[in-house]
Image (cartoon, rainbow, N blue to C red; front, side):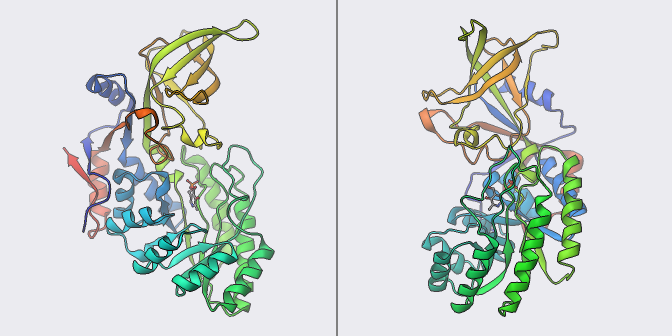
Length: 420
Ligand SMILES: Cc1ncc(COP(=O)(O)O)c(C=O)c1O
């Protein structure tokens, strides 16, 4: 097995994962007012077990775009997860971890030709499409590909990054695309969709699975051997209560619409595995108190992070994929909450993390702990203004490590060092 494209990290085995104790200890150790992450690798293992319990028929293909650190990605690979890749770089990283190409779905409907050529060269057959031009490209560069037609859905709930405007097609367009694929003698194997990141309207899964089943019927009537359904991502990651309800909706709907067990069901969860595994700790390096237009005192805090680092998803026009929960490290139980603004540290005046948040009064040098920061934080962070990438401290409880060692695949090595 070759090494991953990212440098090897270290995971420390500990008796008990006590987040606040670890944060305190690392603040002392790091010695400077700079952000860092804490990872609970055991949480990823727990999530995988939970997935298997809730979705026995659905293969989880981890959306590595949500977190490509070896501590997350190679742990999932070693547990037997498949992968959703969106680019040449992601496919390369996943194959280097030792994952079989059949366990990869190239879930990007619009691909540069060199990406399609890489997929062919590496035998990554499964790929999505949602437009006619993609079919011509695939015809020319990888005509044997196993195509999945991506249908678009536009749920109305807030707090989401909706895909409808950019990815996926309507049912009617989908039918035309299948006809075109038939004309080109391409191999359409199934249907894919993604309800949206952070979408809380889970009932939409019912409609999406139903429409997919109708599209299967249509595809079969054209002579396609449709046997793959890809239900995408969008599963909550910051808590485990909702996922139980979501699983009922999905399993019930699959049972009704895809009773044939020979249809392979795959999915592309990102947040579900990554969100809760990492906590971000940032420093309040500067503070200013200003009056607003009503003469109210507003507390402005400047943190060692921002929209060009761990808050990039928000900065690029989306929402934070999960609610921002800020805890301070001082005992602030008796303090009044004050109207505050949190700014990022770079020179861009748009670098605002929270425009209005209630916080106890902080002082320069205080630390904020942001839980559920494992998805779309590391992978979207840039080096703008020359600020460093955050140090990541990784842990796993001994009991969980021993369990992981028992169930892991023997042909996949984890991409990190272990410290006992
Ligand atoms: C095609 C595709 N699949 C899967 C995902 C993962 O979504 P989530 O993290 O909500 O599970 C994304 C996220 O952007 C995506 O674009």
